Length: 256
Length: 219
Image 1: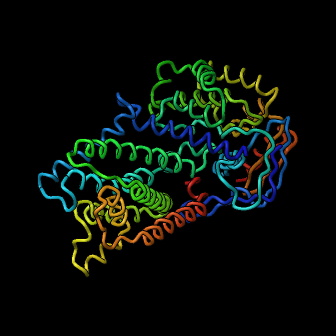
Image 2: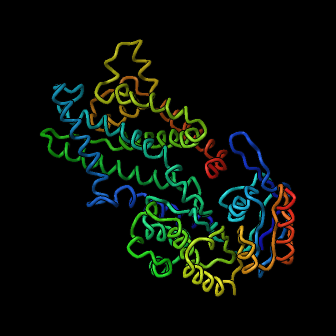
């Protein structure tokens, strides 16, 4: 019992520490954590709207792009922040109370909360200012978000260990991760891609996450090729691999 | 009480494997402060981290009865991007100590002035040592693990350390690493000499110092 209380206390302390060091130094504090990505998404949306007028779905280009980008961010912002969770708190690991997993849990909670709030702000603004009524289907949205977070968590836990053991892998991961934004279906629909290439695109689990997420905003969207079983399988497998690798490497995570 | 049971730990750096302790069994009882002696690189600091539980053994186990501090050294367990105050708050939270009381205590003890609210990364090693020392003295432990820390700081600070240590020593014990045999003699009742992966316990600290000096002459 005392064991859980300690973890609980440590995660709480780390949460405060993360918020303080990430945003505490700027005036406005945590508000920036929300405004920064929200402004980024709105700006990107405006730019893409200028390039491509007609959205592949519905009538609002803004809603089309923002749904794709935010679903993507649930994964991307998560791994980007969690990859360094252990490294960034290395000094604090010299307190025997603080376990490497606590740093992961704290950052996970903080990032999931932050991206969710950003999603509410951005999508709420867009939906509220649209002339057409939108039917929102929450189960699809929550399912996609849950899978994005789980998959991101798994990838980040694998990375925490592998970045430490193989610095070369970090370089490779960065290179591979960079074009993900372009191929994950943020501003196109995989449904519209011709047959042999579509199967290739559909290997990427993020494509399924974004398709699932969009189904929550576009009830008429058929999402051809969306395979939730595949997505669940990949997400849980990655998460399991992350937990396993993290657990067997906990000595390395502490010592190095 | 702290008991080692067939404890083994190797230090591995860049493919070089060096024993810190090999199959060591030893019991340290409450009520006695221990001086830890050994040559440079013998693994004294690693041993302290093992006792604290900040790192794990390769095999065997360490049984701990009582609250043990984190290893308290001037390298610090501080997060350099956080201010002194934030670091103190963090420790108060993870050890479940009343935050404001600890902050007041450490602010008064460490005498950092305005630097208390500046990132620890901007501190000198003396300032870090003062913060580390004040912080750990503000939390009640049964064992304090001290790594060379009293060697830092000016005469005034040393006097202050000595005073607070003496009151602490009535209820708590310390396990201390120091290269200065004088400091060990001042604070410790018994000694452990760490040499080539072996821990040897001496009931009398003078015997430990003598054995350590003999080791140093041999090499």
